[in-house]
Image (cartoon, rainbow, N blue to C red):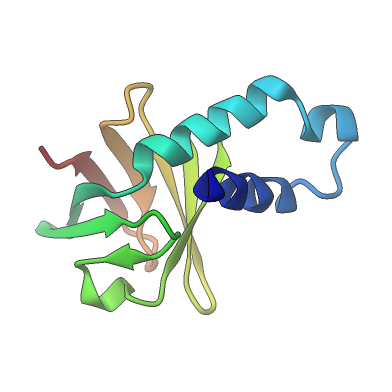
Amino acid sequence: MRVCLFFMTLFFSFFSNADPLERYDPQSVAKAVTLASRLSSSEWNYTWRGRNYKFVLEEDGSISKLKSWKDVRWVVVGANEIVLEGYTDRMHLFFDKNIKNFKTFDWDGTKATGTLAH
């Protein structure tokens, strides 16, 4: 329950200037909570510049297994989108409808993809 509240708070912080009726749309909240729940503790295969890496989206919003992302946090910002927040940059991950694949532009602007590890 704490995890859901955590992600809901972060989700709403991105829309603090939006119309309250849009910001607190029950359907949007439900989708964001569902995404956060499905992604918590999930492991991903990340392909960037022809190389493969693994990382885990931890329940507390941190990322593990990929040492270069150890200080990166993840935040739900939409029904199928999260943002990875580094010190000075952000990277958006856009998931497919089944939440098994994502597309992104890496920190350096290069296209990258990810698939759910089984």
